[in-house]
Amino acid sequence: MTKNNKRHYGVEDIQVLTGLEPVRKRPGMYIGSTGPRGLHHMVYEVMDNSIDEALAGICDHIKIQIYEDGAVSVIDNGSGIPTDIHPQTKKSTVETVLTILHAGGKFNNKAYSVSGGLHGVGVSVVNALSIELVATVKREGKIYEQKFSRGKPLTDLTIIGSTNNDETGTEIYFRPDPEIFDTVEFDFETLSKRFREMAFLNKGIKIEFTDERINKNEIYHYEGGIKSFVEYINRKKKPIHDEIIYIDELKENTSVEVALQYTDSYSENILTFANNINTEEGGTHLSGFRSSLTRSINDYGRKYNIIKEKEENLSGEDVREGLTGVISVKLPNPQFEGQTKAKLGNSETRGIVDSIISENLNIFLEENPKVAKLILDKALSARRAREAARKARDLSRKRNVLDSMALPGKLADCQNTDNKNTEIFLVEGNSAGGSAKDARDSIYQAILPLRGKIMNVEKSRLDKMLNSEEIKAMITAFGTGIGEDFNIEDLRYNKIIIMTDADIDGAHIMTLLLTFFFRYMRPLIEGGHVYVAKPPLFGIAYRNKIVRYCYDEDELQSALKEMGRDKKYEIKRYKGLGEMNAEDLWETTMNPDHRILLKIEIDDLIYADETFSMLMGSDVEPRREFIQENAIYVDYIDA
Image 1 (cartoon, rainbow, N blue to C red):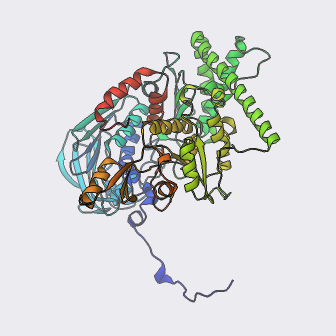
Image 2 (cartoon, rainbow, N blue to C red; image 1 turned 180 degrees about the vertical axis):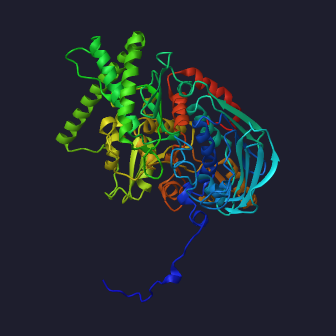
Image 3 (cartoon, rainbow, N blue to C red; image 1 turned 45 degrees about the vertical axis):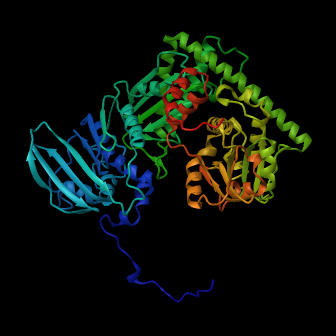
């Protein structure tokens, strides 16, 4: 290798960041991003300290308030941050905790035997990224206060009042720094969902949330804990048994709490938590639960001859069909895989959860034979459907091998085989498909026309679903397989783009497709591969030539006002993509330089599951209530 650069770095190039400077230099490393997600994470970091006090049995009431100017305060009735001089830093413990990374009571398991905020950087990071922070501590009959700005103390810790010895706690008041964040506007709904979840996971704790900006106050308090959580998740579904299966046991310093209820749906919805952290990717606690659930139900079925001697055992997928479950473990030294804490890695936890679930579930099934029979019947139906689906897949594979036609005939594939740069458009009908085929760049854009509305998979099992030619065409085109065969590594296109007409039918088709992706190909959404194209609603033409496109009524009126009324403009309303010529379709909806694509993301799994169940499920009443509640907000319906 030839060294052409004669510039050598020296001691003057080495930058040493002290105190909280690294946080302000690289905030994303500590809170994930400087966008809305990172902003809200600031509140969670402060609240986690209060929750840790609750886990230690010291705190039972947390108040969060957003003020009219956008500042936030988190108040708890815990023990209060210690105020003595810290022996190492020679500063008050309050100042030490708020100004030094990795300073906290969560490392030796003496102050907190169980903790969610394991890195010990939470409140100091919030301090670093706030233009103003005030810490108020009630402890030992005194009220202490210290003020900070951007991580630096403005005052010493000062006694500002007195209180009785029984009144203790901490208040952290802060205003996020607008120089750091893209926005400093907190969203009430985003925060309320998090607070409700925390109240479910810590039964008995009261969390009070007030937002002065919108004059709204909510209290989250659930004595039933995660049993109430399952009731909440299933409130718009139809459970097949009333009593929620509930297990709560401590073993080897690990608390295992599980709540389960089966519904008449065909999809499972299991949420897992470790020390109140949502482990979205599961981990050893989920593995232990799954193995014990499958074994216990099979053992019960064999014992009472519900599963016949010559029949194969039920699979994990069979016994989890329609199951809503919450698994919450609390352990002293959790090991999370990755910076996001998305997966629990403690190997011993699997065995602990397995044994606790097996013992308690076996007792429940023996004591509740009617519920046990309902669960077995549902699982056996799921197995029959799975076997039928497998036969359909096997038949499809054989036919494809014999016919050498692995891809659906109506697919207009692209030339590029590198899935990092390819995209497939799902369009409704042959007319729109024809326009899209003419408009596309065939090097990297594929077109798959879909005939009519696809099956509503919310009301269908996999075996019925695989009878749909449209669904089979998508599965084959994507290349990932489905169900047990799904493999994201085999995805043939980086972007899957839903491109439907801008009318009610188009919106319905889009919803049907999103239901299919959410229920049977969720990793496509989680991996950021699913998009919705936004075609224009109007084209403004002058002398038969489109001079401007508008995407909604407001934009149209604004454009007409801006262009003036002295010329005779013709307004074209695009009711369908098939009405647009190829040039217009490319320029407005398919050209990466000009198009508008909406990326589909799952910010709240519980809300997403509830919404699909309500909109597309078999229970009519929740859908009727939704329509009645929201009809007043509809300004325009395209007939």
